[in-house]
Image 1 (cartoon, rainbow, N blue to C red):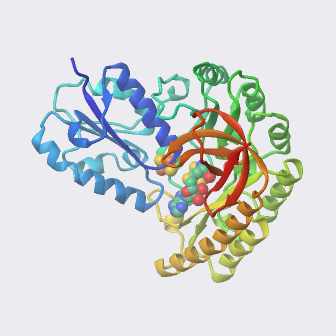
Image 2: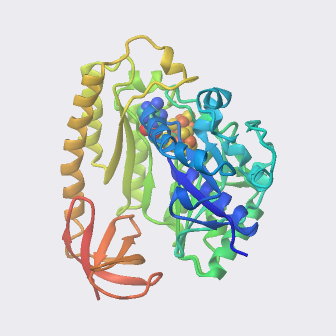
Image 3: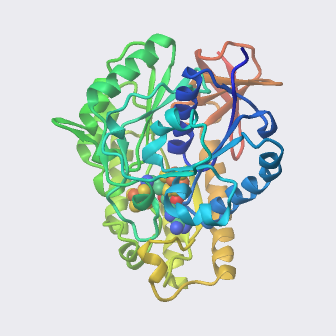
Length: 429
Ligand code: SAH
Ligand code: SF4
Ligand code: F3S
């Protein structure tokens, strides 16, 4: 018998991408197969993101496009999962009647039972799940070389702009033994790289295993060659962690350390719990201990009450720190987040102007940073193929294109020949 088809569309961060892999894992153990078009599906899942208004608009527009299918195929089930599902809940169902199920990020395990429901009752599952961090999900991973692994769920930081603490609930660390077991299995299966996932990996703790200890334990696992993690909160990045990063040979020389803004006034309004100088000290320490480390960041422009002089401090920060890359966003007011109610919102025109300005400044910095790689020898893990050859990454997370047919999953020494803004090109030695 042919399996039932599931079409899944994912929005948002790696956490959501991995949640989709987990839902697909559960469904494939029930005989479902993934299909590449909504019209071939028996169930359609939208795994949504609520971080900025734009992410929600993208989801709503995709949802609109499948309305006609629901009329043609009355048995088709439409499931909305993820952060937007959690935030909007019943309101979403009231607006869009053809949705069958709404499940929050804490309840992806429920997908197992709801797909077998034959009645027409609509269901909303949004309760906080006190056990999610204890479940070992059978993820169906898309990539065969690198794997995402959850280590901590939820977030307790309550940055004032952010919706995540409301969509993903309280912070809960996954038991270290479960994490190690999963990574051991990945190593045996031939995976070469793991990326540890959490909104704030630095606050990981399971009894006496904190984040640095966890890294040390993962570093011993056979088969795994590279360890990465996202995201680190600057307030929790300790010198001990930096030492462990330096001493563990598998931990890659890259950190994503969101700064958000260069002005202390704005950082305070954002509830980030560090000043710019404190952040800068951590950058100096990282570069002192791990000289070739690449550092990337997130920036928000146009936070409420951001005056020109505050924005100029962000510009100063970029010039001073010289990040390897940044993700920059216009502040988007989110429901439930305290920043929504702050006075002094910035106009969209000013936000756009500021965004354009910092992206331009950073483009030049990124290019200069990449130029430093020319003529150097880098260890590259081959991750993918394209028409011209293969694509891999350096330990510092730079994309390298190589004209070669070397198999995916190999680690090779590469001489970097040319640097571009978003990638490097090189030849295998
Ligand atoms: N937990 C991670 C990632 C959070 S979301 C962290 O703390 O860094 C990723 C990024 O989206 C954030 O770093 C922030 O720069 C951005 N972001 C979050 N909420 C936003 C909002 N309301 N408007 C604009 N950007 C936002
Ligand atoms: Fe959001 Fe801040 Fe938590 Fe990151 S640390 S998820 S930005 S509240
Ligand atoms: Fe990720 Fe978006 Fe939720 S960024 S945590 S999917 S709001």
